Length: 65
Image (cartoon, rainbow, N blue to C red):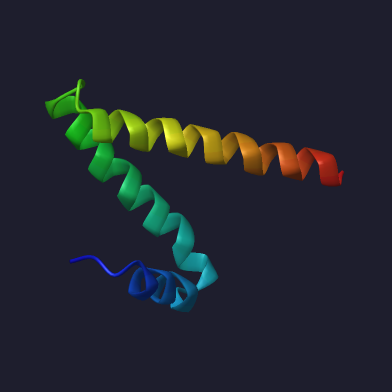
């Protein structure tokens, strides 16, 4: 069973310079899954959620300027 609290802790302990590597690895994992099965709803949801999160962060960054 996945314990999201443990994952949050690991994420919090990850060095800031390593976060882009984590994001890139996660992206490539799902990209490979998408290439194998482009109709996989979990993979589609991942990319939709990632796109939404990126848009929200970019919007917040624009509003701060």
